Length: 337
Image (tube, rainbow, N blue to C red; front, side):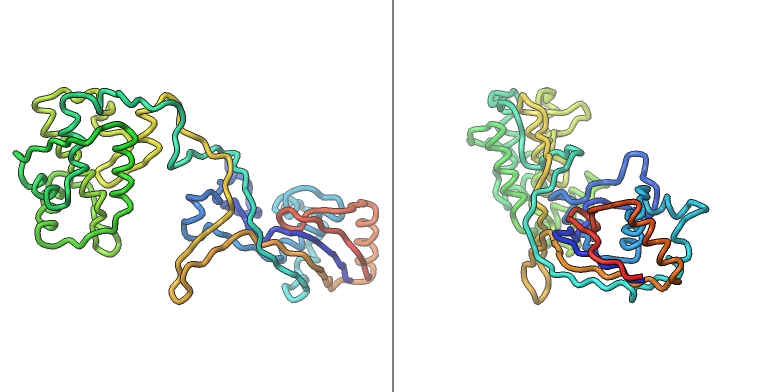
């Protein structure tokens, strides 16, 4: 038996983790197509028409709208024998692929990593107190002075920079964008002091280099300890005694600005489906959504009696069109018993 299906604009990517062949987790499957999660290994998922796709289509054509794994669990599952006989070679997909930029809706409401809402508290005590120039001034030291500061408890910091949340945020973003540095000479001496002070922190990246922002961020925490002897830093610190959005290794803009704005964190309800990767020998490779249009031929090695019964069930169900994989429009154009 041969079933011929034509389809248009079938999406060939998956945006959720897990599998259709297993029950849904309690909280549902996770959305993995946000700008952040898409960068993680394995989250850009390409899809092709597989045996599972075909079995889902066949069940849909006879009017069974259950998940495929649910239909397979039925002791009277109609396609038990068909599945045993069906091979990947029996599935012929003549597809014309195209790439398209699309905007994906993310109803989970992820938080924007680099934005904020509300008015900025420019006169927050954290930036206008007597200790503020000494605290935030650490971020404005050049590298040589920063190392001197880390190694000398009596080093005096007194920045003349106009301080407010935006200027400090911009400075940390700049430090975050700088290239990691080699750990040698005085940098190594400073790192040894930080390792003794903050023993639970792993400062080096995979290449054994020190991110510059980590050096400055930890220096901020050293300054907190030193200033706490003479000042009450309650206005600048969180309940746990740290700096909002700033760890000893780095910086998260959304958490930092939430402390100094009147609004909540900004939510992200969607994003372009776009992945940029740097591959050796290829340079920057951009991956977007793949759409396919074409013809699918399903060859079923079944008896004429089974073929007539299946054709009758398809005609009785009267399914005019359906999804092929994700989105798209598909319909049966011919059935040859």
